[in-house]
Image (tube, rainbow, N blue to C red):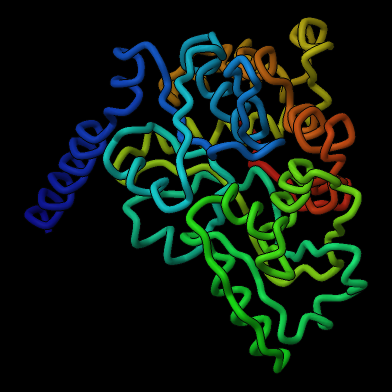
Length: 338
């Protein structure tokens, strides 16, 4: 029994050694002095540069929040635009530290790519965009339609599943980039453009006459979108994951960019833990005690960044829907900071 206990003890020690040895991403990011963040090649509301090269969007804010937590400076981010096809390779190779690029969490991606999803920034679903001139009111009226889709995404399989399950014929026309796909749709090379509904709203803004196009009511899949990090570094995985959770928890507790200075003075136990005035939870992550203060000061809570980038305060005007907090009828829910 003593021998077995020794073996177990040695295994535990070895496990801690492996964990410490693999916790290199935070160290590398700090030494480099900048976070490398993989984003889309330009998707309004999620990640897109303006004419001066300044990036904005929900996915962009996630990376700015991580930079704020690590450096206390949300500008210390290098944004790396990636196609759907190249995004995973960039993460695997170490070109980027985190992939924050409207990417669907699936089992195969979670297991076969050497990466971990850290949470859900946007609960989405696949849909269809059509020209109003077609006078189509439902996806069930799309029999024999030609469908434009971007390669390297989950949309191809979803389209096949949907049309087959409804005994409809279709022609799939695939393109390498989102811009090529949208251009093909707009010039009439296909009847329908399919993608995540959030992307349909974003891409519609790029069309010459957005009002001439409509998103059909059907949602044909579950598309939980979220950031990814490489396997093997639990500390970095925890930092990115808890950055998301902090934004959601801040909204639930009513902490905003505007009222942050006042809220920090609160004596409520949950707020004192969140702000680091009680305990050392931030230090357990490898960050500072005021890590949540840094995040909220930089980008706001989850609701603020949602509204500013894709919601009521944005050009997209997408309803919160499933992305409301759990206690408001939605799915957004974060474990407690305690």
